[in-house]
Length: 267
Image (cartoon, rainbow, N blue to C red; front, top):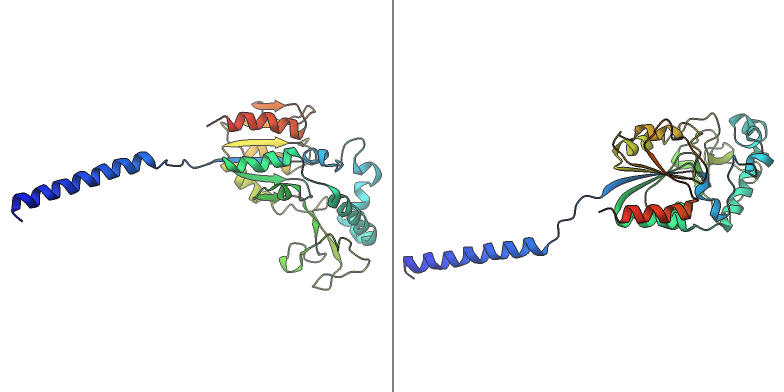
């Protein structure tokens, strides 16, 4: 092959490579990074699933005062009474199913990088398919050591056939088995993790919470000033001093239908 022939062959190869690169670039759609969506939920999220709120007029605190079932002092005074209360709640939870609001939150993961931070102790977000759920106040379907609450070696997940903590039942470290619930006055171990996600959020959604319970209510303050904030709740709610909140004054499912139409139409 002569030098001229070699040159022509090389030129053709370069043309083919260039053409292939252009075709490849036009055929492959480069995916943009998903926007980070932070969803904070409270008791109103699970009302449509048949679970009572705690603070409303017909809520659980009406029949079971906080001081008897949700403080460390109550646990020390009567652990059997406290455990029986949470045994009862587990049986109620077993009958509950995720509502449309839970399912719509989970469905947003198709288009967004979603973090759910919940004040609820139920597992309905997980049951609906949400993959990243941070529980601020504990998990009803778990029990733990009363001596070393957050030690994972002694955290036990309850099952439908094993819902009740029996009087005197012990954890693996020999202490009494207690609900894996953050009692009033106890530290909220996951609040710093939740705050980190709140800082990174491109959008902030609040569903079914009065924003009266701290430190959870303060999470909205970690949202950057330019971050859009949506609030879904049928009642008037003050969002911790933020005046740029878009309030969808509806229940969880109806409100999530409206919000989904907004977010899924926002490319």
